[in-house]
Structures are given as C-alpha cells and as structure tokens.
Length: 534
Image 1 (cartoon, rainbow, N blue to C red):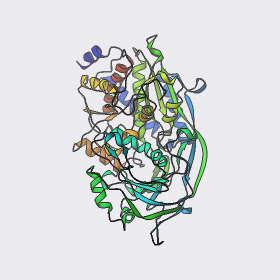
Image 2: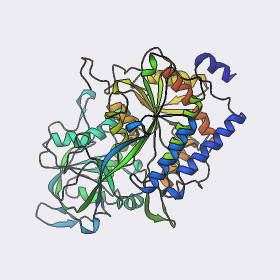
Image 3: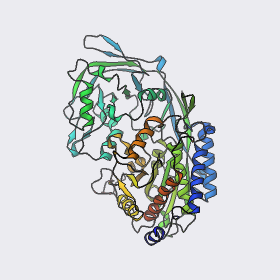
Image 4: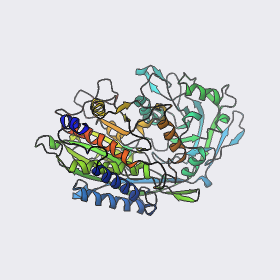
C-alpha cells in the first residue's frame, strides 16, 4: 500500500517497500560503507590527512559504481579547498585575570580555558577589560538587543549560551555565526563563551583533550567569519564562578536564568584579561568530492538539487580507554553512507527532472569550511543550485517515526518535507534542543547563507522520550570520541534505510516540482528582493 501511495505522489522515484530483500541488501551496503569510512585504517579522517585521502578514494569508487558523473575541477570528482591550519601551543602560552588593584590570578590555558584556533589567525597578545554581555544577541527586530547602550570598545565580551524563548531557534543560532563580526564592528577585541551546565554536550575533560588538536580556517580571508587577531575562547563551567568575583553577580544564578531563557543583566566584570598566546600555522588543501546525476527534463535539468554530507572527522587524538582513533562512524560516516544509498536509488531511475548534485565535503569539523567554499565557488553556475538536503550524524539508534528537518520554517522546503512525511506515516518534529545552535553547525547552513533554501535531515526525537535519552547518552559518551566506531552497539541499518527512503521521496518531490523552492517572506535568510546578488 505504501509503495502505491508513493507512486501516485512521486511518480519519478519509487523507494523499495520496507522489509523487502532489496531493502535488506541496501542496509548491508549502507553498513559496509559506514564500516569502510569509519575504519581504523582511515585514522579518523582528519582534514588534509592520509586517512581522509583514503576515505575520499573509497567514495570516488562508490561514485563510479553508482554511475555518477564527475562534477569537480577539470573533469574530476574533486574540488580543491585551500585552508590554513593552526594549533595553540598551550605549554608556551600564559594568561591571567588582573584585578582593579593589579593583583593577578593565573588562568591555566588548556585547563581553565580553551583558546579557539579556528576562524582566523590568533592574536599573540591580549590585554583587555571584561564585560558580561548576557546572551550576546543583537536582534532589535525581534525585541532583544544585548548590545544596546553598551560600550564594547577595546573590551572582551563574556556571553552565556542560550537566548530568549520568543526568538526562533535558527535565528538565535545564526547569531552564533554573526556575533564575532558584530562584536568587532562594535569595537570589541575578543569573546569568552560560557556554557550553563544543562547545555554541556561534551564533558569538559574531553573538550580539553580535543583542544590539543589543531583547527583550521579558509585561506581566503573574505570567506572567514572571524576577524584576524580576534580572541575567542571558552571557560571551564566548573571554574567559571571565579570570573564573577567582585561583580555582585554569580555564575550559578546567571546559568539558572539562561536555562529558563530569562532576561540577563549586562555589567562590567572586576577583571582585565591578559594573555600571551603562542600558535603554529601551516597551509594545506583538502578536497570536496562532487558528482552529478543528470536530470531527465531538457529544461529543468539545468537546475541542481544538492545532497550533502561531510567526510572528515577529528583524526587521531589523546587516548580514551586505550583508543586514540576518533573514527567518526556515525559522525559522519552515517551521512555519507546515506547520501550514497540515496544517489544509487535515484540513479536506478526513473530519474528526477532536475539534476542531482552529490557533494561530500571536507573540513566540516573545523567550521563548515568545505561547504562554505563550495557554496561560494560551486562547480556549476551558482544560480542553478535550487536546494540542499544535508545529512549529518543521523543517529539510527531507534525506530524511525519522527523526522527532524532543521530549517523547515524558513522556506517552502518545509512544505515538501511535511507532505512527504505524511505520505509515509512519519511526523516532522521541532528542534528539541534549540539552545544547541545545531542549525548553524551542519553544512546546510553554508547554503542558507548563500541564499539557497536548505534542510538538515536526521532521526527526530522529542524531550522526555526514549529516543531523547538515547541521543543524550550518545552525545555524552560517543560524540567526538574514539567510541564512535564501527563496534558501537545499537546501530540500526534498516532504520537508516527508512530515512533514506524518506529522503529519496523528498528529493524527487523537490526535483520534479514545477517551481523552485522559495524562501518565506518572514525568514531572515531570504535574499534581497530588489535584484541585488546576496
């Protein structure tokens, strides 16, 4: 019955009926792809590493097996992404909180504070007063502006995670990307981020291990979000209270208010922050992998629906439980495997009217760098990119009944997503953890910023459910850890194929539509309507 309904609704692509032998074969292939991509032999697929290159070779072989045509540089499957790598030398770096009377209190970098090595070259010397800026959100159009009336010139802003409840999650998340630029325009020289206990995803002890690894940014300065020399760091939640000594405020109360999305005060802290930061840098390139399945309609085939996932992970790092390889089987071997499965089913035909561009990006973990580069410099005319569906850390750990489609309220793609979900007995659910800023932490955001409607798809879950518990448990124990490997229990390949079938039908619905997806008039991501290029 399900196949008949889909055949009526989406005549160009009919996914296999769940539970058939073909589905079983697809589940085996999906898991084989995850195992190959997430194998120890690929050493965690750090951007620019030999392990990442081996995984890229494997994906290219799969492109050929599926029958996808090259769509990269010079007739290849690859688009070279120019990058710079930076590592903080914590052993050679020092920092202090300096009180109003000149007394110094040491801040141990690499223990009390993590200095970000992403975004752009770090300044070697920092000496600036601290000011608490609440959530650090500048959205006067939504009735909230932490910047209003505050003199930020020459200061380091200290902000806490979260935001007012009345602002949509994608809008708040977008502030996370825009904040450093806005702070620099206001004269600030740095940002220190604080995390309320309820928003902690990775234990601080594991964050410290990861901080020893290098980070990256795009070589082209105009593509960076962060001004060169801007100081960016995060503070240990367990030691944050010391920042507020002498201010008349305490972190516990501010964190409780942030957890409740309540208004926060803004005030000067009693300290100046001073630091000498040492760093090493090098240049490198790493490839995006780009393939195309030509559309069947002579007119619409010039348009492209982009299916994307990221191949990179965080490489080899400090040992946890005797294991130093951060395999990234689910993050994002699962997404790459699903894109390959979806592409294979679409290639088996009949083909959608618009062309399907298959994009496996590099350098997602350092900050969506590969997708940012592609969205600005695509290997096809940029105006032909009509939509993006992104697949990242799918988490097939429970039976699929709900879909999380981040960005569904920003464009007409949300209508497509709900219509297809209803046809398959599935439900779209809102972001259950909006303060995580997930909307800006997956590659679909690079397309959104370029003016292209996009969704990030994964298994949905709701607060208080068993799925919610499993998701939280996985994040705490396996996210960016060596235990995200091919031996972890609980993975359900057959359920992953069910999500793929949803995505196949959704892709077909978009690719066969009479009109292109359109932004909602209320979306802050909608391009200007006066004909100017976004």
